[in-house]
Length: 253
Figure 1 (cartoon, helix red, strand yellow):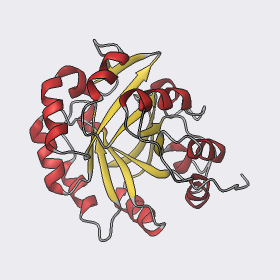
Figure 2 (tube, helix red, strand yellow; figure 1 turned 180 degrees about the horizontal axis):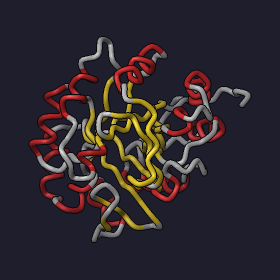
Figure 3 (cartoon, helix red, strand yellow; figure 1 turned 60 degrees about the vertical axis):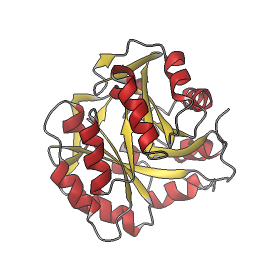
């Protein structure tokens, strides 16, 4: 059983996906289906800060695809005055990567490939930095994917969840790849199931498109947060209404 959220609200985590210094969104993790929104990530972060966002979900897509990490940019974002805390994912595959991120001021790190490719190292990292590691389970058709969603994992989901259970994780981030960036609605059942299976709070990701999606997420006690990207950038929902919906409030859309 996962740690159940007692409040009636869920945390909104706006996504800032970085590709070549720009804020972008992909569809189903496909770099060929990329939409660029701005070349000023700092402006996006300050907008979220001014709206009262406490934490943002940043992904270094360059690093996720095996290219040079955007460390200088991420450090500038962290240095933004009164900036929201940063939950960082993308290309964190070596202990040195994680040490850099946490020493630079990242609040929580999101790790995927290490879970299945280098399990002993992941266990060591999660134990060394308790409650600062988020295990990301990216699923496509019931199959776990790694390396920026480009490779299939060799382990079944159930075995991965069993291995994660004893670790002092901050959360488990669940993405249904088939829905990511598609605006088709998230896979609530998958996120709830995996949060329960691992026994830590779940973070819902992939496909959030409406205020109704956010209100429904707020009713699921296994979930602690929801990541929203394209719906905010395309104006399907406003940031202000999204915050209200995450508190369970009825907002006309």
